[in-house]
Length: 409
Image (tube, rainbow, N blue to C red; front, side):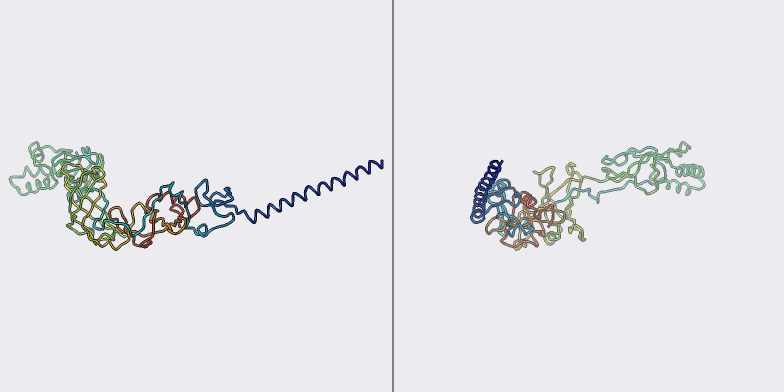
């Protein structure tokens, strides 16, 4: 019994000694490695992909961004508008930039956008000349062509029935009261009743219950006011027509373009439908009142349209040549650099020093001269802006949680 107790005590002591030797050695190794690690090894990570850990600086294998020291934030990660991209990532995304001020813009050219509209000087209304109900309407839709003298509707009119009875009575008294007969006939003429129908009533001695009315204008129907079964009143429009042998080209000119646009100025117009065809025209009207919402004025020219090739609603572009050289002193940027976010216009400005760094910048733009926009505020001469790959740069900003076109400033 005593022997067993002695063996147990000896085994316990041996186990304690063995454990001390093993674990004390391991802790020493771990402490040594930890010391070496903290002293000599700096781990690098990606600000967008923190799962990436590397023992040395370089590019993130996922997004291509520069790795940063683990647990470290640089000034660009704090600034909500600034972020960096490696040159390799820029090359892969085909991002190109342009230095502001080194652009040769067409200062003597202004471009305007607009639409074809009916010539309102050649617009006419077909009214009803007496009260009645439309029993039959021959003109049923907008876009129909109506010719002068064409039957357009059949009307029932109690007013005309009473007037016919008055006409027949006056005809019987024609010899004794010729003036009364003439006055009654003139009433029918004022109602635009054809002379032929008046004579038929008189010769037949019968009252007509329905009258056919005829168009006294020609053109294409642009607005239809009446329908079959509806009641019309004297003077109310049945339809409106436009003579499309001539049309208006109506453009919006920005406030900054107004000084370079004059009445009587020659312009060249192209359409999306016929891009290879240029129409030479003259500005005949400039709206004297500025639209305060769009900050534009209406500019228009009259175009001949004998072949009906120009349809109201078509988009058109106009170019004005030799408008001066005032914009030479202004900063211009390519139109491809500007991104629109509602009422905001933004660009991405590149920091030319060190690692490529970008900053979203809100700018105020003015007129468009050719393929360039005039910058009123927000950029300085010599700054570098992204002109190709702007949406790629914006996407990178979104991925990094920076201010972008989508999430505002």
